[in-house]
Image (cartoon, rainbow, N blue to C red):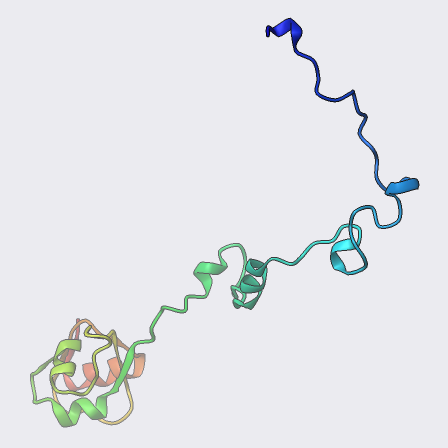
Length: 149
């Protein structure tokens, strides 16, 4: 047998179009009823359902991922009345010192950011280091002769 002897196994057949009456009309190979038999049927993917369950990214403007930061932790707060009780005259107040005296808890093993507020009275000279200080607290500390660094 050689190439010029090869013949097609069956005669030339034209593609039969479905849905055109005769033997290929009615359901057009789609079975009976149901979502899959309809025109333009699409099954909603499971991934879409998962995405729709996630909360929307809230915030403002085109940089909304930066405007609302869920990981940002507010500083721990201590009033000057607490410093008055737990620190001696001339002591240095830092976030680490506050953790050592157990006035503030660590956040997953880290020393938290601190803010000192001006509630209460202060009579001791204290040096405040590495802490945010409110306006009223700063005035009270400097009035007694302390420093905010």
